[in-house]
Length: 560
Image 1 (spheres, rainbow, N blue to C red):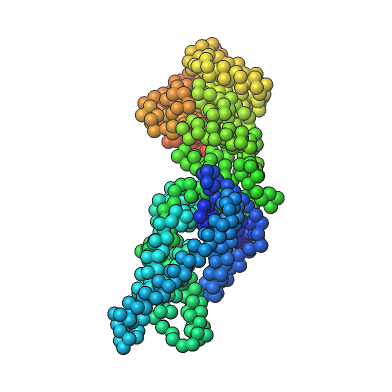
Image 2: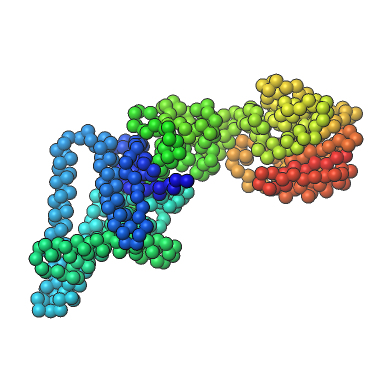
C-alpha cells in the first residue's frame, strides 16, 4: 500500500498553498475580498529523509524552494499582475535595498558597540558575545518593524492559519484565536536558524582570509540548519506545552493572530488537494469564472459551524440534485447554484431544519413531504418500522396512532400486504400524510381522531404501532433550535414525565388489539423500562426491547 505524503502548507501575502501527492492548490483573497482558487499537478514530490541531521538539510532546502514557489505562484495568479511593470521593479528594488540596509546595520553597529564596551585589548570572547547579543537585538527589532507593513502582517496571519489547519484540520475554526506556532512551522524554523547562525558565527569571530572565512561561515550555517531541525523536532515530539513555549520568541516574529477568513482560505486549499488526491480524474481548477467547489464547500461548512457542519453535504446535494456520494465529485458551481446554496445555508444557520428548508425528508428509502405542521421522521424510527415489518403477516390489519407525516403508515403499506389505518388529531398533519400516501401510490385509511376517540369501539387490529410524543414538558426548552422551532409542540410534549401517551395508548390498545395482537412503540432515551412496566400492568407479555444505531433502547413491543 502506497504511503501518503504529509500535507504541506506555505503562506503567501494573500492566501496559502497546500500540496501533497503531486498536487498543489493555491487559495487566495483578491482585492475585492472574493476567494480565488487554482490547482495544478506538480513535479515537486516531497522526499522524506529520516536520518538525523541530514533531514534538517532536506527540510531547509525543500522549504525554501516551496516558499519561493508559493510566493511566485501567488503573485503570478493574483490581480497584481495587471499592474505596470515599473511598480513590480520598484518593489523588488525596495526589497533589495532593505536587505542591504539591514545587513549593514546588523553587521556594522554591533561591532562598533562591542569594541566600545570591551575595547580592542579586552577579552575577545566577551567582546564577540556582546557583538552577537546586539546583532540578535537588532535582528529582532528589524523583524518587529517589518510587521508594520500590511503585506507582512497578512503573510504572518496566513502562516498561523496554515499552522492551525495542518494540526487541527476542519476543527481549527474554534482555535484560531489561541496558541503559539508549532516548532516545525517553516518560518519559525527559518528564524531559529538565522538567530543561531548569527550568534555562533559572531561568537567564533573568524578573521582569516576571505575563502577560509567563507568556508567556516558556511559550515556554521549548515550545522545550524541541521541542529535547529533536531532541536525543534524534539520540542515538537515532547508534547509538553512548557517546553513548546520556548518557541515564544521566534513565534512572535513569524505569526500573527489570523481571522476566520484566513483560516477558511487555507481550508479551501486543503479541501481542493484532498479532492484531487482522492479523485484521480478530477480536473485542476483554473478559476475560469465559475465558483470552485472547494471554495463553496469550505464557506458552507464555516457558516454551519454553529448548528451542524455535517448538513453541508445534504444542502449542497439537494440544491445540485445529486446524492451525497456524488457531492464531492463536483468541481464547480454556477452563480445561480451558489446563490441557492447560500440561501439554504442562511436558513439552516438560523436554526431551521434541512427537511423544512426543502420541504421533504428521506425515510426508509422513500421521500416524504414535511412542513412545520408535522414531526419530521427520524432515522431511529426506521428501526421501529423494520421491527413491525418483521412481524407483519399477510393481510394483517395495522393501526398507526399519531401518524403525523404518515411516514410509518405509508412505509408499512408500501412494503407489506397489510391493511393500514392511521390516526391523528391534526387535520393539517393528515393532509400532509394523505399527500405522501398518494405520492407513493399506497392505500391507507386516514381518520381524524384524538387517539382512539373516533375509532369504532369494536374495531380490532393485529398490530398497533406508535411513535408518540415522549419529551418531558420540562425538557422541551433544552431541545435543539431546529426541533423547537420546526416541529410542532403537539408532536413533542409527552407530559410531565414524558409517558402520558404511552399510558393512554397502551390502555386503548387493549380494547382494539386482537388476541395475540402486538403493540409497538418507539421510546425516548431511558424510557424503555418505564414503558415495559406500563405494558405489563395492562396485560402485555413477551415484551422485548430493541436498541438503535447508538446502542440506545429505542423500540419496545409486546404481545397481548
